[in-house]
Image 1 (cartoon, rainbow, N blue to C red):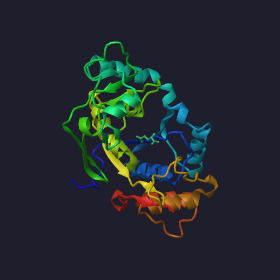
Image 2: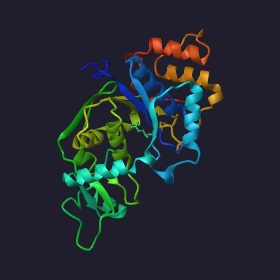
Image 3: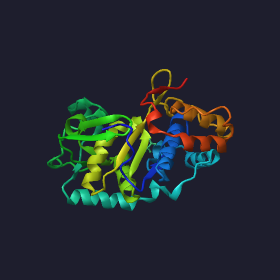
Image 4: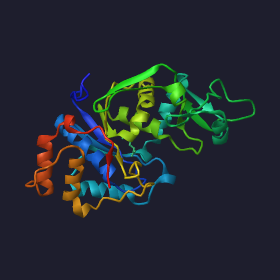
Length: 302
Ligand code: GLU
């Protein structure tokens, strides 16, 4: 297939789903811009979801700051702004469904036991399946996992092309409810994308590695097919993904026009000099946006 084909789904519904673990930075802003323009290009909706389900990693005030920054840039979202911290019942129901179907099981293993018994895979240690057939006598379940198999789980990314993983050997059975009692991102994102009727997931390429397990889970939960587009990864000069951990600078909303110009340029769309203010930049971007002009990445930000 052509990697620049239009989304096969109509009406199109996309989203931006930041985690408030830090403020918006060049990488997350660029993802917001790309997902927004791709939705607009398809005459679609663009929703906003705050993925605030990991309090220990969150930064106080970040969720509000992200919203204020997006507003200052002129983003307009459809539907109701949603917060994952209000969705615990939905995650619990999804886990109950998976358990009833035999797709999820309790796991007693500690981090140490897993590290000692596992090989490193493409995204951390590959769970060796110790508790697949039941928790050992005298132990109790600490976490819940999704049972996967080793068939090739494949998809065509609209920018990155054909992708796939053999989940059991490359990732291992996926944590759904963590030992510390928090819901795993992998479960929450799939439950919410299904519940909100998302047709198109446009996000940063750092999540490409998570997509096969999310597709597997989506299928087990009876979700409709969805299309994926992973925008180029933004890295610093050391080649590290921009993030709070790598000390990426927060976006200054008072410089919104120049930051938007930069984000568009990184996405392969250099605005003409006469598009000076925010309104003119958005107007130009909406008229000229073409996914085929976006580089697959990674993009180095000095
Ligand atoms: N909340 C995730 C993040 O900020 C993004 C989830 C997604 O777009 O699927 O990395």
